[in-house]
Amino acid sequence: MPIKINDLTLPKEKLEKEYQVVNVTRWQKDGEILGWSYECILPKLRYEKISVKVKSENPIITPEELTQQSLAMVTFTNLVIAPWGRSNGQFVSYGLSATADMATLVPKKQGSTTQN
Image 1 (tube, rainbow, N blue to C red):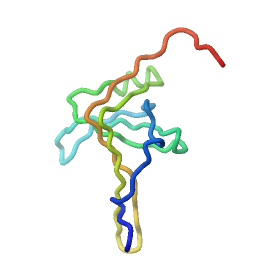
Image 2 (image 1 turned 30 degrees about the vertical axis):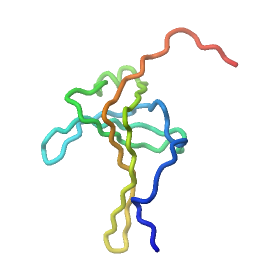
Image 3 (image 1 turned 45 degrees about the vertical axis):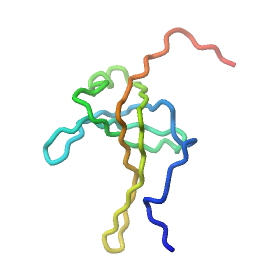
Image 4 (image 1 turned 135 degrees about the vertical axis):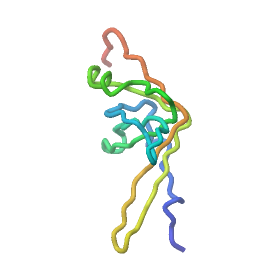
């Protein structure tokens, strides 16, 4: 029996608690603005990038603010990551899609940190 890509799941231990945002763009389909897409890196997965789509009117951080700060960390509420696949003849493409109900900017930690 063949395995369907929808049968695959990403183990919870491979997910982060906080995600570093590297890009913010509008999420739109057929010209209609649906929300915002946050491109994040996944250190536990060899720094793979994933775009998490969140339905909201305003981004939690603008692209300009992200450029100024150079580092922004976010958390996602009800994050769902699902694999997708598409075949076109002998060529097969696959990837991950991600959506969340809400994104929250993690405040920067102030002061010095202690090293162990």
